[in-house]
Image 1 (tube, rainbow, N blue to C red):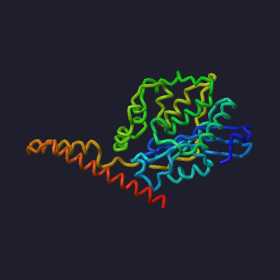
Image 2: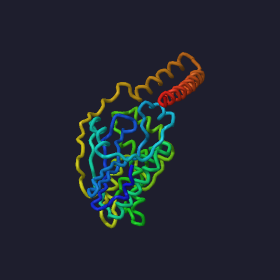
Image 3: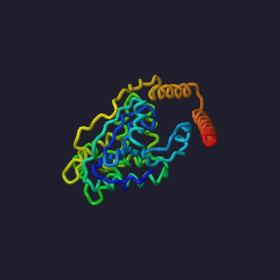
Length: 289
């Protein structure tokens, strides 16, 4: 891709784009990316910080073999996938000084050139965290006043993720809780606990630079949301827990030694993990071929 920041910046606009949640694990809380439009050169690019494509290598995600980084794609092309999935997208223009917008463009362009070079870590480098980090870097010495965002004070990223995932997806909620480490449990300031795109939007609407909100408009709809929410699964974590509790009680009543059951379960899990790693390696080799 050409060095976008070398182009004329007259009329340059940078917007926060927020997409509705999808059905996949990596899209369960939606997606946030930045759109750079320069009418003078008729350039219009979507800068999205995300993982590399998982098509054909889903097992790699669970094995921890996924990288992430910046992608720069013509906006019209980038939005096609959201249109096919029926996921709505709204655009919010960033009300920042021209020099800040130019620096932000340079940062996004530089990140795109660095490639897909970091291990996947949604807690520390998710789309919302990354976009906010780039904006703060572009601000330089300008202060981002977050005193007007009490909703994000005294919270943790785990709290914010839990509130962002709908209750009709209980298995996903449990998996995300297992995926997050201790870093998600630290109580930090508003900027540090931004986890989901809706957190980033809330922050930028309330936060101020030079006494003005970073986002002051209501946004405009770029794509309508036609996706329907998936139904709650028949088998829920609570139901499984009840079954396991009943089995444990039955074992105690029948005098079965519980530690033997645990040992056998541990051996089965170890064998299953070994098989999983083998399948993942075969899957990667097959995709390279």
